[in-house]
Length: 57
Image 1: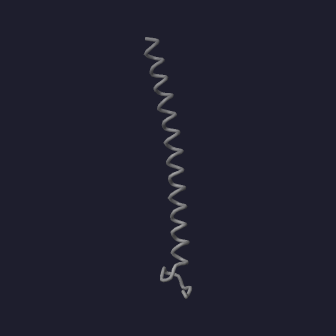
Image 2 (image 1 turned 135 degrees about the vertical axis):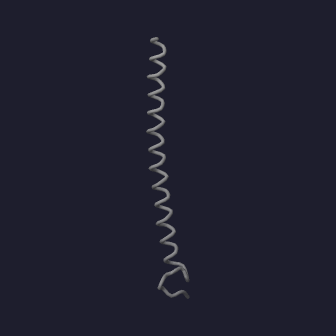
Image 3 (image 1 turned 90 degrees about the vertical axis):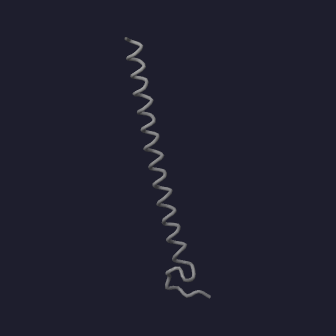
């Protein structure tokens, strides 16, 4: 019975670690997506005909 309890505790620890890593990866992915959106907005505002009111030469 003791081995079974230890196995369960180990599984709980592994699943908890996986959850923490998943949360960190999700946060990093959101940060990357946010950075890409800001980058796209900056590029759109500086291109000719990209919705900017600036004139292109």
